[in-house]
Length: 96
Image 1 (tube, rainbow, N blue to C red):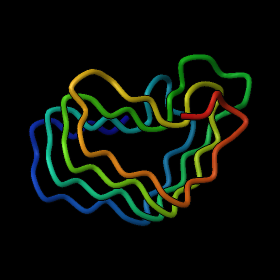
Image 2 (image 1 turned 60 degrees about the vertical axis):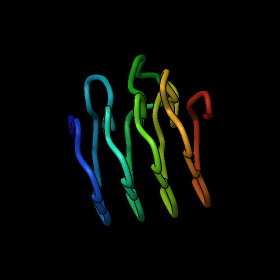
Image 3 (image 1 turned 180 degrees about the horizontal axis):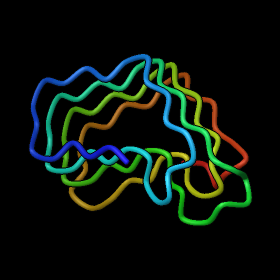
């Protein structure tokens, strides 16, 4: 639903994403992105509904976030460096 591609110094806060068909949030080829106090909701039986996907990015922080999906709460793709995840509630999906 929401793609951050090739961005720097972004703060995403207090967003709610509901029932995305695939990824709810994608962070790709970016640096210094902070995700804080975000809520992601999809049915526990919905396939391929990753909450947050990070790839080819550095300096990403995901904090104080609640992710309820039918697939990965947070998926980490190739080229990801310096990823910090703290105080994330995850379920019923596959976790991180």
